Image: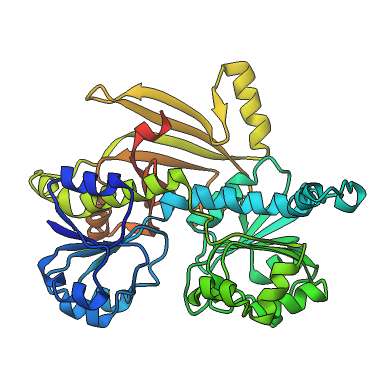
Length: 449
């Protein structure tokens, strides 16, 4: 495959693709029009955010098989038209979700403990303790809107802070051991801290406006590490002034479509932005929540892995006479009233090496490679086993999840939800004839080592 790289990324991306036998060309300076003139020569394109991939671009790309964006969102691509043209879209939200989770938590703790204000005061010779008395996170309810990769990462980071974590998402059944899914009305009734983790779409655009804010029963703190377009800044400032919003952590701003360099050079700030800059209860960062040394590497590697899985591993799969099905038990999940207490009992009395997820048992597969099986207690109100009503769920290890699910669907087996991918493998779900939900896992055991 011949691939055009039109944004600079970590070298692991180009090196990885070339090791797979791809021919990679770099072009980081040509205009969009110049690239359109030669794009028909390429099977794939790797981008970040240099320009939008629109209908005109796609019409020129006669031989394009995929577009890979080294990031979480695909809003810079005309997804509907790309699908119509048969172009496969790849993104890598798994690559920077941990960075986003850590950044959101860091901003919140900075706001609650007046760290920005206190630091500046000390540097100016002021030692004001009472004026910087903080607020504790413990006991509060954190509401998350958008419970995908980023929302789940943030919820995981909140473990240990003794907070209630709830979420609202347009998809059903997204709850896990870290968060309970609720209606938007319940979220707005209970939330003390609201964190936005939605992709850009027509539902999230200008979502946080005056009407939305006023539907919250209590004054709340706002975190936005998703898209600046999700928050109407004028309405947020109005809510900050009347103390309906107690403070905000903003890694993204709706003004990002403008040139920030020009804004700062000319001091020509929008009035609401001027307020944010001066306010002590606002924490700002320049769209860097997912911007870490580690995430740069992860994003690049995930793109390589997904290109390989979709396009470069298929030939070997096709020559197999049959799809190997279940290769072992990947995990036993069951409901319990108190997972933490139960894990402690198994640790103390049966020697289980427990962690946040339960206990991982290691063994070797038929090829002598290290493999794992997971033992995991879930809170008794979990919806992770839905639509099954049983108290347990089995996880089975498989070799090729996508091929197997396709085969099972043709055999009339009920498929539940959509495939999800993480650094430790791919997951899919089916129902057996008695309504038991079964989790199928194509593992990457090395990620646990």
